[in-house]
Length: 388
Picture 1 (cartoon, rainbow, N blue to C red):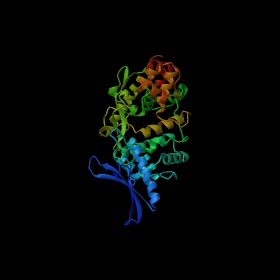
Picture 2 (cartoon, rainbow, N blue to C red):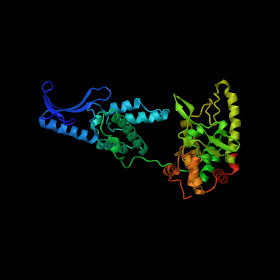
Picture 3 (cartoon, rainbow, N blue to C red):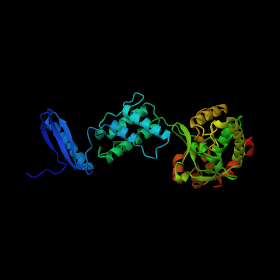
């Protein structure tokens, strides 16, 4: 009888273990040159042959067979320990580690899937887990992030030959999940905010954010050196790193842009600059001069959570309710330009998107069918008397 082909496998009785064992030969590891085998075991020969058939099917479909002794927890833990260089900000790391904890340990009475052997994880397993998260009230974005982290971990395991398929990529996202759609303020709502007795810091922040559409991180990373007589240059963003706020690079190459400076923004920024100079003198040696426009009490970029909390308080005082977030000033900018007839391509350039398709995808609720220059539109919408 001829020699078996690789992948055919064999079944034998293991007296020391008291069970039938099925083994499949995958050849030699290209790096270690050791022979690689995958095994299954069962109490009966028939059951063992059935399990071996599953190994054969997996080998023929994927060209490899994942290890049965590696769990989802091990795969996810390894992936979190080897995050790519692009994941450097503390907020991003927190998103990854939070998703990893949900996957491995579950949350809100939703059991995790960490104990499941990674090679035996199915798309149905993943869908049940994600469906449990949706039923427990997790937001749609959190569920999407959780699946993305699991998919990344399984891709890493695939490259290492630990699993033969990526169950997370095959799984569908559940319907439902708590979805909070971002909103845009109307010009009347912006006027209500600016009608408050605001500090120079807050008046400059609100006007600049609404009239330039900068991302929250770009707002807090804005430097005085980036503000010219007629332009505002976007060159850096603030990120949390090692327990403090630092200046870092932009999100994408397209994020690097130069915007015309609306007159009202110029007026409130000048007033804020004078107020900041006085505050810097009072702080003395405690001021770290990074040249940041929207600095905290020590001169470093302000904390985003402080801005978030402060904006909610101001919106509540203005009668707009507390359910507003800093990023929605960006939605306000896009909505105002779109309603005024500015071309979608110009809006995409103004907000720093790679192309208008991204703008349409992110701001589809704020876009109207759309042309004019952005600073001109803003000057018309928000006259100088709001800069008081």
